[in-house]
Length: 147
Image (tube, rainbow, N blue to C red):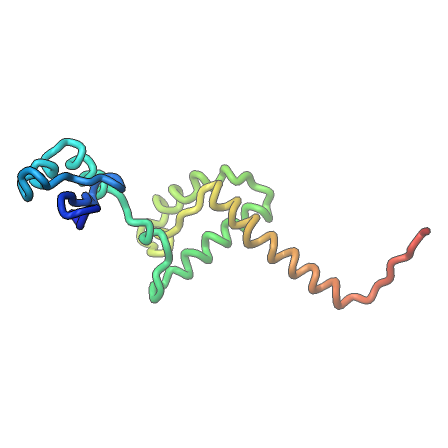
């Protein structure tokens, strides 16, 4: 909760916002106890408990979430193939979770319009362009110059 400050008369509060130093010049540990009971510090502690760590949103090695990720990609492809709106995906995740309550893959499924658009523009579109260019390289053709 506290670490060494800029000098021996300060402590750095690691719970509150960055750069919050508490003077320990007057009462030492008593100054730290006084800081801990302030409303700002208690609110910061409560906010940290309710927040998720950023690393919780990354796929961890060894976890089998490939099927859920494949489903998200398949739904993005399905959206484009059938000319659906990206906004349709805003309620699809919730609908799937309510419909298939016993599926572990559906519990991990999460894809709204922004994520679907990012998958289409960042993954599916570049892949389809690369695949098309590779296929065109195998076709012998000539280009006439009309100059």
